[in-house]
Amino acid sequence: MKDMYFQPKHAAISRRSLLLAGLGTAMSAPFLASCAGFDTSGASAGEGTVGFLSTQFTPVEEKQRYEAVLKKFAKAPVAYNSVDPGVFSSTVSTQASAGNVKTSLLGGLHGELAPLAESLEDVDNLLRDLSGRGFTKEMLELTKVGGSASRYVPWMQATYVVAVNKKALEWLPSGVDVNDLTYEGYLAWAKAAKQGAGRPVFGMPAGPKGLHHRFYQGFLLPSFTGGQITTFRNEDAATAWTYMQELWSALTPASTNYDYMQEPLARGEVLVAWDHVARLVNAPANNPDEWMMVPAPRGPKGRGYMLIIAGLALPKNGKERDLAEKAIRALSEPLSQIETLRSNAFFPVVQTELPSDLTGAIALEAAAVRRQQRSAGALLALPPVGLGPKEGEVSQIFKNCFQQICLENRPIRQVLDTQATQLNTILQGLNVPCWEPDPISTKCEVA
Image 1: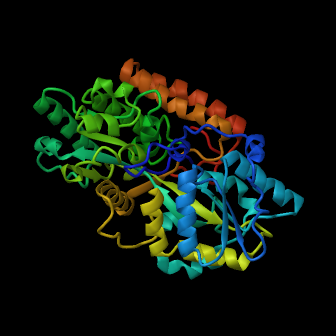
Image 2: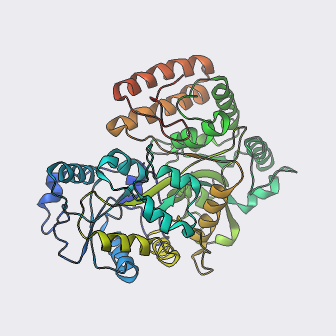
Image 3: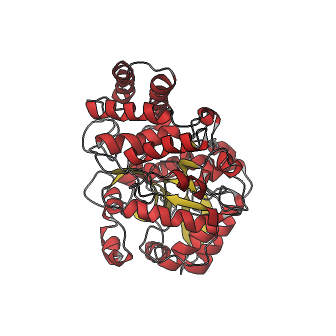
């Protein structure tokens, strides 16, 4: 699950944004081990110190900012080591197998923690103690990673929303609520704006490095079918792609060149666009009063949205257990969550009032994220879980559907059947359970 976060205005797109967007370049364990003084084992944390191994905040500046958060809020001495997901997974697994666990606390994305569930402690009692924090029931269900006991405590989150230049409100059809869009209303608005402006002004990130596949996986298909994989080629899926074909006719064709929608939005080429929060935040940076950020549309099955969530876990037989639990409690407090938002732009997972002095772009996105997640009919979807290096192949299937249906106008049913066969071939070789919104208790395959 690697699609999560957004950048403050002053920062360039960092490796964390690329990693979380599924675009990161992995660093090998030998490379990391060769870095002077870099310890991926957790052994550098002495007695009385929490050895915190994490996949987050690997760039130096981000790590330093988060270390400042830990120093201020963790209520225990913490040695923070941020590593590549591959190193993270192998370190946790190897230490658990050898019965020589050197870490105290683990931090990673849901998709990074879920495969390690057998090496993680049950945190049900800890979550009961933190019940007043206001974690959503969907988040709490995710922490069980398909089992009966929770294996991590929610840490931070991000998602995708719609950026709106207020100029586009001129063409908003009567009866369409910009803060509660439906797919029907979104399409009508895109068509009206195209006609009113004399050119398409809606866009999407359909470029070579754009994340448009996440739109189909986490938004379009869940909203129309209630699923992502099991419903891939049913009649509702055909309806969804018929809709997408019509929507594409109202979007700017230049979308096939767009990787980060904040760039054409900032230039005024596009006035309305869906994208990852990391790839929208710079659009309103200079003039936030001229912008809105709103939830993605809702469809017949609900408001499908893709959640990128990170969690805090306790390794079985880990060191300094009491201090590690103390740190988790502290990092789930509203003040520390808000400080993480300020420093490294991850959204809170707890129920808390956001301060009024957040920078404009971050405040806009934070409000949209909250409305989307807590709206009626919200339907949580995850990026693919447990696919390892095959995740790119699965995502390509969704890109193929867009290419063949929207750009090449091939018959929808024929495309879905062909791509479903390829998707099942990949999944059958992996033999993994599905992920939300599909039932996670079944072998994952297209019906």
